[in-house]
Image (cartoon, rainbow, N blue to C red; front, side, top):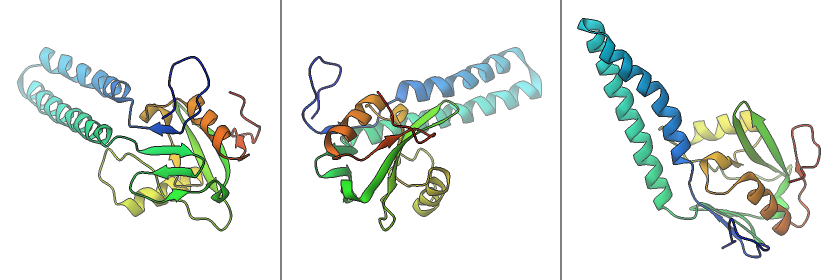
Length: 186
């Protein structure tokens, strides 16, 4: 496994696990805290409704946390090495099947989209927090990003820079471009 947050070159494959639980829970806790404060201040029927909403939001936050911990316990979800991109439970995508890797930014979200060669079909990678049919998620992801193989560093334990460096190290020249189709320098 590649070294992380240490001096010296990373020579081994990059193994990526689920990450980002703190950010996920922090984003969910802000509106939940506002609801709790509102429920405490209000009384009567409105206070009861606010309390029910708080319980529902709390259960959703707890469910997201549990689901995330389950994904984290699976270990390595993505591995980048000489063979290509290996997704747990799915085939390895060879570097020859990938035309380019595109760095994409949408509001606060950033991701790396692995675009396929014209004749290649890439598998989907995602960490679903809510239950949607796999085909629905795949179609939506392909429509939004151009490929079902999208890595979002905010949901993983590897940074964008680490993923980009691993692609450069192992891919044999697959270009890494930004949204303006300019080479990414990290």
